[in-house]
Picture 1 (tube, helix red, strand yellow):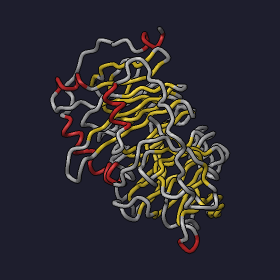
Picture 2 (cartoon, one colour):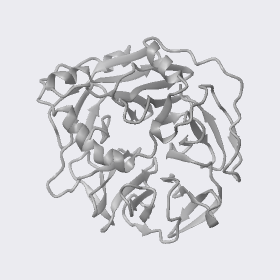
Picture 3 (cartoon, one colour):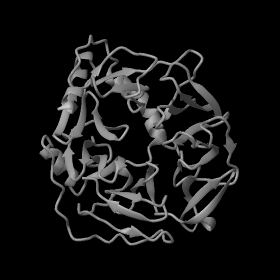
Picture 4 (spheres, helix red, strand yellow):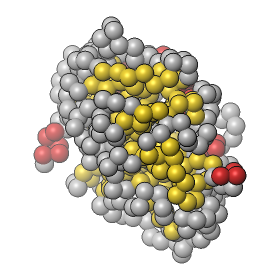
Length: 402
C-alpha cells in the first residue's frame, strides 16, 4: 500500500509547458550525436526466441546458439497485451536497457517497418521473475532509474499544454503496474535526493517519482550546461554531466544543484561519454574527434578521487567499441579495436595507459555497470539480447528482456 501512497497524485498548479515539438527539435542534435543503436542498426529478421549463451573471452565470434523456446515470464497485473505481442514480434528490436540486478530491469523495444516510415515503441519492466509491458505508442519510452528501481516515462504525444496530460510515469511493484499522469510544473535550479535528472527530451529535466511531475532544471549564470549529456548519479547523491560543444567540460554538483564544480575535458572537441563508479570516486570522461561518430576518441580523462585530480590517458585505443566504464576500486574498463585490428579487445585503463586483457564480446552498445554487474546490448544477430558479465567483461551470458 505504501507504493500507492507514494504515487498518489499531488495537486499542483500547472504552468505553461513548452510544446513537445520544440523539445523534440532540441533533442535531435544530441540524439544523433549519441545514438549508438536503434532498430535500424540491424535489419536482419530473426525468430523471437530466448537465447542464452556464454561467450569465450578469447573469441569475438563465439556462436549464438539458441536453446529450445522457453515459456515467457508471467505478466504482472496491469501489463498491456498489445505491448507484449509487439515486443515478441520477430521484427521488434531492442533499443536500450537499464539493469539494477539480474531480476530488476527495464527495456525499450521498437519496430520501424521501412526506411522513412514511422516507428512504434513499447517498453518492458521486469521484477523478480514477472514482467509488465507498456502500451504501443509513436514516441520512444524513457528508461529511468531511481536508486535500485527502474521505471518508464512516456512523453506527451502532442504539442500543447493540455496534451501534457497524456504523459505518464510507469512503475512495477509487487502489486502490479502503477501508472500515473506525468505533469509539467515550474522550473527550478535545485532538486531533491529522490528526484531523477534526464536530458532525453532536449533539455535537462527533473522528474519527481512521488508526485509524478517533470520540470526544467536551470543553472547558475556562471555555469555553461549547454549541450549537456551523460547525466549520472552516484550513490553519494552527486550528479555528474558533460557539457559544452567544441569546448567541453565535466560538471558535478554535491548540493542538489545549488552550485556546480567543473573541470575542463577538451578545449577543442565535443564531449562523448561519461561514466561514474557507484561510490563516486572513479570518473572517466571522453571527447570525440567527430561529433557524428562518438566512438572516435579525442581525449580521455580519469579521476580516482571524485574529481579532485585528473589524469589524461595518452596510451589507449583510438576508438571505443564499448565504454569506458568506471568501477569503485579505481578500475576503468573499455572495449576497442584489438592490436592489428583483429577484432574487439577488452582493455584496462591504469594511470595514463591501457592494457589489453583479452578479446571482447563482439559488437555491443550501451555498456554500463552496477559495479557487481556489467551489461550491454548485443548488436549481433537480431538485436534482441542483453549481455551480462560478473567479471567485468571477461565472460558473458545473455537474456532477452521481454
